[in-house]
Image 1 (spheres, protein in one colour):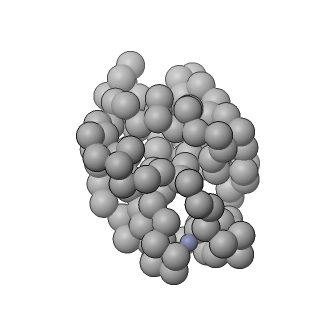
Image 2: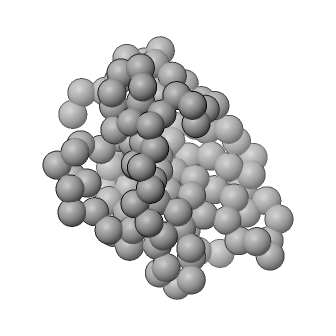
Length: 115
Ligand SMILES: [Zn+2]
């Protein structure tokens, strides 16, 4: 898969919602996670990103998100429940959120979602 230009908005955190066209996939209800799954297309380079956001309202600083580069073929049959597995199998992704005290950094694996 071709990576976006390294200086594209979709490769340089912090990410702004207005830089993407977002399509909601649904909510991952596995173990009551309530993870919000969204597909985002970069308006600048057209890259497709799978975004997963989860937050536990009873815990402060628990917001965390992951976003990984995907292809239209991969997400064709995507369900919200399968999104974490798909992200975990990517060679790298971005992660961030209040839990990580980060506005986004590149990482090589997706940390376990559940508290
Ligand atoms: Zn881009």
